Image (tube, rainbow over all chains, first blue to last red; front, side):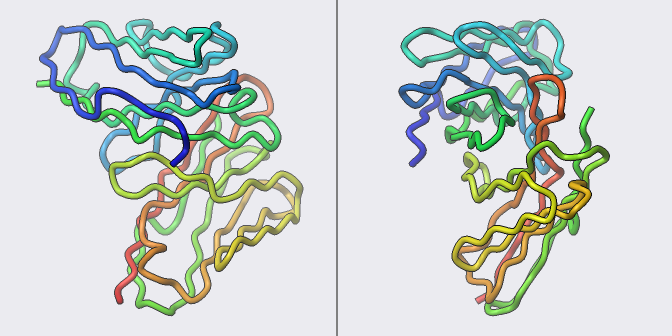
Length: 116
Length: 111
């Protein structure tokens, strides 16, 4: 148990729709990062939020956006869903920015998104 | 961008055997993290290496970072079925707030 929760567990959407995934971080963790993991691949960094502001982004288009709230909850929003968006979406919380020295990330169990 | 290559891609070993997983970076590593993932689940932190030549152990798992900080290895001694899963190395570049994972190594331990 990492203390990081995600909802929903599974989700099925159709192409063109919009989706919101939610994450609840560990209390006291200022950073939340979101990752996309396609089947058989390593997680790909989407973006990172630090104290409610985006402060790092991977190679993902603007239709991937996020929010971080003061109560340690956060959201990942994806607009105009495409078939290739089907993946496991993971959020991770950490005390400081991801990859910083001695900065372990605590991962949630993930949300499995299927786009038909 | 930072690229992390892992080898082998998959590994099947008999219980009790030793094994090694490698992670090679295209750039000097700022910090190298090892995580384990059970199929379709979240990642569990194993250990983090930062200094060239550093070695850490936890129970039967030992991780090393080479002097040039471009390659790391994860060694499991006397493997058990509980070691099965996907092992991922991860790192951040020296500049920019991002994080990269390797391609992953799938480990199966046969009782």
